Length: 495
Ligand SMILES: *[C@@H]1O[C@H](CO)[C@@H](O)[C@H](O)[C@H]1NC(C)=O
Ligand SMILES: *[C@@H]1O[C@H](CO)[C@@H](O)[C@H](O)[C@H]1NC(C)=O
Ligand SMILES: *[C@@H]1O[C@H](CO)[C@@H](O)[C@H](O)[C@H]1NC(C)=O
Ligand SMILES: *[C@@H]1O[C@H](CO)[C@@H](O)[C@H](O)[C@H]1NC(C)=O
Ligand SMILES: *[C@@H]1O[C@H](CO)[C@@H](O)[C@H](O)[C@H]1NC(C)=O
Image (cartoon, rainbow, N blue to C red):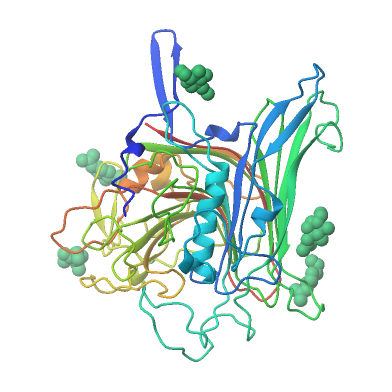
């Protein structure tokens, strides 16, 4: 099944027309909750192992998929009270292998990977919002990933192919169980008139909830433990939801990722090889879309924290055809703008293998990477090609073959003047700690001019993006690292 086939995505939704004097502008939001302003929140949680699967569930935690979705109602007694009508129970959130639920297929009942994928669909059904004249949508997705890989487990395929175990050393892993799923605590959203220092003087109630937890339940209790937390908060009827994130690595879990994602409401989102649920009720296609968000990075997470202002994910085959779930030929395509100023450009005149073969300027001029006078080396952190590409131009480097269910391609960008045209950061430090900003990014324009590999002579793939994320990936460093950031006002508009 392919997301391209769904004609629901062609429906135009939530058209807002503002007429300013003689000027009329129209923009269409691609997300179910434009700007995160809807009081009735829809948010879900998922945790992934190194190759975006579950492997083994954590004891008494159930399958690592959960959701917090509710309708805000006002009391009927004429008072000023409100209450939250939750759509997902804690029993739903704790569902794990061996427990049945409506729609579960028999083959998934005892398979933790298949079970999680189907649980996501089930939670999606509970959370789904169906409005007039628009495709249904489900939730924002909070994604947490553990970068440990036990190479002796043979759990992760190599470019989508099953491979035998191999000796440890290339990836972090403290031993048996290092690919575990986290302990997850859910603080269901509640509403109150007090308890917030920030809004103490307000006369409107505040809704607040969150997820938090750790990977370190196998530890004996010595040393610091890993930690993740996402809380959300909003005043009734005003402003945007504020998503506050914290992520801390530990000695046993030195490589962790935490993102807030707008994923497709159906089909394959970036990094998935199964049907997903999400927020993108219209799939944005290059070059005609923009992403708006406000990002306030409080703590960077150290020099190895690859903070993605925006990370876009999609999937197409090397011959340009859309993905169909065949992990041997589907290729996840990612492009990320990394805003940690400590992230260097690995692409350089002396390291052409880390650069894409060419750069395309806003006026559509192609500049080859061997054109040392003109190629913007500083604009690229790292480019790596799909491990199963057959016609790569030398020199090249191929992407990690294990950290995705299928082969992947990465185009990682750094702030550089060349991106100014798209509203992207132009200088190292833009948008970093102490420089909170509201971004209006021409992600569509930029992504239409990035190099992505395709077999020679094939028709260019339609660049349709199934995931747009913000968050950080903290790589292994020699100490425990902590990152903290706030995301608000997220929107994707079709232009
Ligand atoms: C949807 O359409 C129906 C029938 O036209 C109308 O009664 C209802 O108020 C609409 N709902 C929304 C949320 O606009
Ligand atoms: C999650 O948050 C709760 C409430 O703030 C706290 O008691 C608990 O210790 C946190 N979990 C972890 C793993 O720190
Ligand atoms: C396109 O832009 C490049 C640099 O951005 C400039 O050198 C070149 O002259 C421009 N070409 C055209 C045709 O405008
Ligand atoms: C630079 O790379 C292009 C594309 O691979 C190639 O056609 C050209 O000959 C190269 N130029 C030099 C000077 O190596
Ligand atoms: C544990 O956390 C403390 C406080 O954040 C920090 O000073 C210390 O270096 C950490 N320990 C290790 C082993 O990183």
